[in-house]
Length: 489
Image (cartoon, rainbow, N blue to C red; front, top):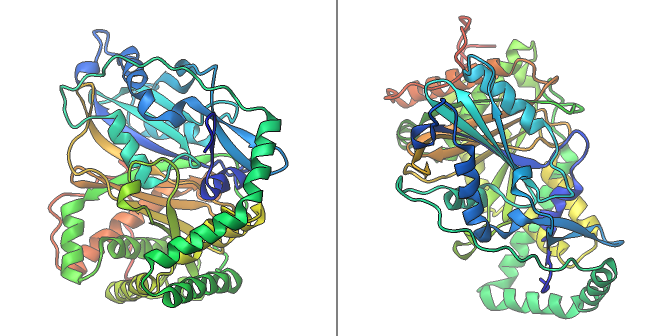
């Protein structure tokens, strides 16, 4: 960190380096609100009030008024204050075409998340979407992954929103941007940083030595995790219809389930909520690929499951503090209980072996190693996999924006190269919201995958002997009668 700029961590920088023409690296959230006091007399939404609310909290989110500058010849970026920051560029206001239903909201959200963020400006946008049926409106929040991960995104949402419906924003603070450092200064500082690397590396090792009771065991665990990661990267995953070159366009859809029902399934089957999620995805993938005339028994299907390594003291920090588990889903197994048992055994093994240390160690090394280490970490973390499944806990109480109650908070995950389908979950106020992001051409039948998720979750509840207290809320489309996921060949 310098007086006039902040250096991106290696992990944050990785998301800038891996972004390409067909792989935008922003994460998003679809937030659906009751209109409440933000409803105007003409039926619209008071967008000016929302802009004022954002202005009032910008001092608490410095990254919202910062843009990136590149260090010459280094492939590393820094955050600098944007002297031309203009909130109107970042807060957009649109209206749904009539009749303003779920279909129209789905189409607008899909288009918004398909477009890259402008790197010459702070890397975020908020789209205010009015005209939603049943006296509601929506926000589509786009933020580059180099700024936040799932956990920091939840923390940021609680800065922008409030558990108190009567809360109103304070007066905004004056913004005095710091001067932008010259390329010469950035290059000089980087050279000085490289010169201090040996001393800082020794300091980091000393810190590990002080904080670790068994250094030999710690080093062994990290080497084993790295070895496992390299082994996975060379063993390969199967080609499937949802994997291949990505296009520039996305599809987005969502559904939600009861958190209480999910916990009841977890308790009955003696596993974790994440095990329930991965088993639900397993059943859905098996059914979805079977309908595409693919034999799941012949496939090795792996998902990347991000794991937070954020300490309690880092909860409010921006940026990324995540590692990754690579989990092979047993899609060749038809028995739902056996699917769950296999996943539970694998996630327990990954936890006990501290598998997440592999990526974490690479990212730590990348702070004082060449950029190639970062690229290696990105490559190992992203492949070979078939999909991404990320699950983030959120607040279990209602949040409000200027008195308007937040009804749903649906996450959107990035798609990595050759990965045409990603699943993100976020729990909020008693529900688990599932967000599905897909490549427009690789997965044109995304609604069928959502139906498979609904079937899979329902079947898993039956196996657990849990009667669902609340119905699953998903796509409102006529559904063809299909065989259950468990009974398909």
